[in-house]
Image (cartoon, rainbow, N blue to C red):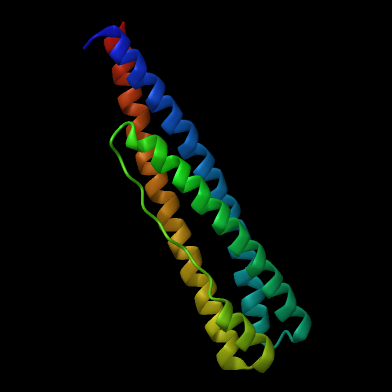
Length: 151
């Protein structure tokens, strides 16, 4: 392979790695907030009352914002990955409908539904982060191979 092409591929791979690392950091932030929301959700389910429900929803709102930031980071990661012909798809959502139902009715069913929703979002972010880390490992391996080939 021509040296300039190899150098260009190394550069594009480095850009993809940086974008992937940023997506990983964002996923970790969302997971931390989802863990907090889940903890408050369990407390609310066990009878924590209005205050615990409000704190849980505050954490859910923050998680929703962090998941939106994760989506943007994944979009950037995907743009960078196109240059090295790899793709990383992921979606994670929190439903506003159940949040309203949980606040209005605040009963065992609505608390359980909100907790299930939080758990599902957490699992989706965990799967997404695992995929990000797998791709990062592959990219780092390829980058090292290219650097060795470059000499």
